[in-house]
Length: 120
Picture 1: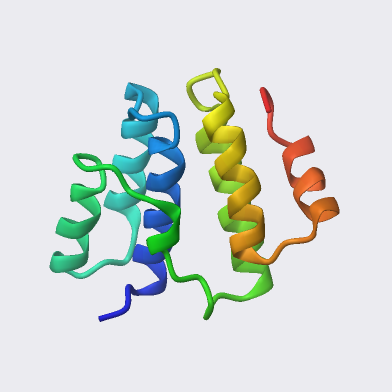
Picture 2 (picture 1 turned 180 degrees about the horizontal axis):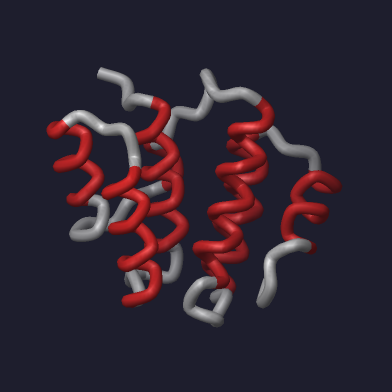
């Protein structure tokens, strides 16, 4: 069964948090806030909670049904997630590049979004 759009977004952000091999406290707190605020069923909320316990890969997130604005928002939030612990690891940078492609965003759009994220 495909994820709901909300769970797909959370999956992308979790993949970003896991990109360097571990979730920092600030990343975990941000994900918990997102999960608490998202419109999820109980089963989806439980699945999202597991994203904090087990590594999530970008390739498992389906974003094909999301609008251009939603995909830009996902990228913006992923950039913030990468910079939340004030240390953007090479693996996080690599995942941002992969995410840009996964979302179908032009390089100039990604650069514009990144320019608005402190620490990136």
